[in-house]
Length: 150
Image 1 (tube, rainbow, N blue to C red):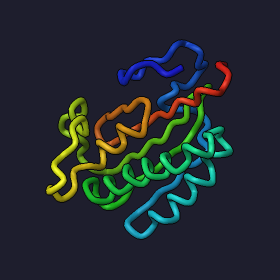
Image 2: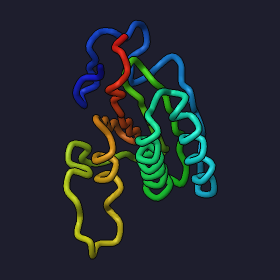
Image 3: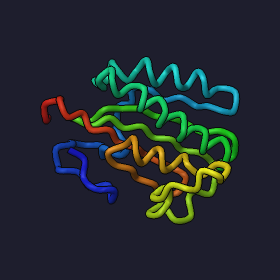
């Protein structure tokens, strides 16, 4: 089980941290023109990693929002990694940008419906069980409640 946003875990992971695993199911670079391919790859890997069918759409939206933010605010490109550790599925996007200035508050409040943009991190927070933001790397965690603990 993954701990709080501080990156702690419950000690069940041996070797690599759950936040930086030794084995990744999907590791894909993307740019402005590759977001549709990225969404398809996330969807294809999600079920194989144990995400229930009724949550795959949410993961695809989450991954798409992370990647779109990287393209818009992080230099036009990024890298998405997807993996499972125990009963948690991790979706991580990193980009070459400067990062998020106030990660603890980013996306905690829904912006006005009249505002253009500014909803991506709020959507990501709604679709994930945990969120960790470190510089220009954002990792969303989806807990797989029906999975047995390691």
